Image 1 (tube, one colour):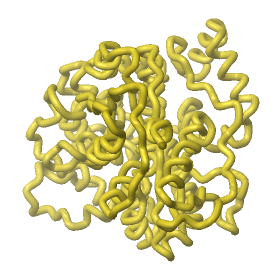
Image 2: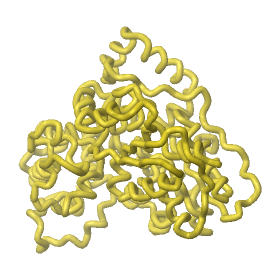
Image 3: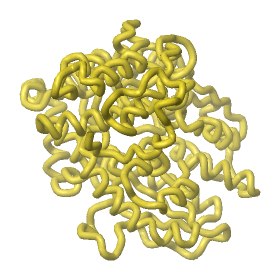
Length: 446
């Protein structure tokens, strides 16, 4: 079986290992599926993320374990000559939101997010990618080329029931959901000032921050400079074929199964990061799913040994601040008018254990009460919540615990969510306007 992703990390799993049967075909991809030991931890409620689709349906078919069984059947030839188009596999994967909860909480660390990417790549290679997948996957390109027209089109669509219905029929985007609107102007980096007394960092301004919420990047720069760092915004390398197009981690392409396009974006990123990797300069990111792709999915994109070094130098904004705080860095912060913050963690933040750093840096703000919402996936999960057939499931995921907690909070409580799609889900479902942690720290600067 020819795979689109690099599954060589599973080379060490041999046929004699105590896994529940490695399928006959699929090579290392089959081994990645077979790590599941069927302990049914994915079929539970309570604390944690896993598994959002099971939590709203309580149907074992929509659990990680059931998906593994479907893949084993497919790779054993039980689903015919075109297994990636078989209805059984489609049904099993339908409500998977790529939350990575299973990679963190499953004792066998099943990476269903990556397995799903390969599934979509195989499916679209055989059948062609639908219009909606091409639209959502290619967002970085569309936003760069057609920012003005897209901004106007989204506003028109959001304000017209007729256009919303037409978009649902044409593209499968739910007419009942609001599409995030673009900022008036994309992020524009200013030249780096004098060197910081604590050195410098490279800031990765992701596609969503760049085009939708550039104020988040501006706030992060303010905080990092106040902490004593010179901030270089990452830009394409000198030999980049598209020097004016912002860098992208490839997350949108991966989520839609377009692995080749994701590899192309990742190679642009690696070329731009070469100076940072050479001199050990920290790389700081704002959007969890984007920054953490550098520490996770990049290993599966055949990018060479430099990915190992990248994994050691790439930090989420709050992770970097906590690390530097442990080394003696001080931020002068004052109390905020609001005395409480309510924090929703992005699924990937939880999967990589990054919530500790969130709590730590918020504790630097005097007199602030910090509460983490015990929530599963917000349900938006990139484009999932906008898709007509998934809009209701998306809302149900948000209503499990996230939205009730937000609605019950006092009006002056600050709601924090680092994930762009998480903020969109919270705002649409509760009317509250959540913010990135960088915005809160910037407000508290003395």
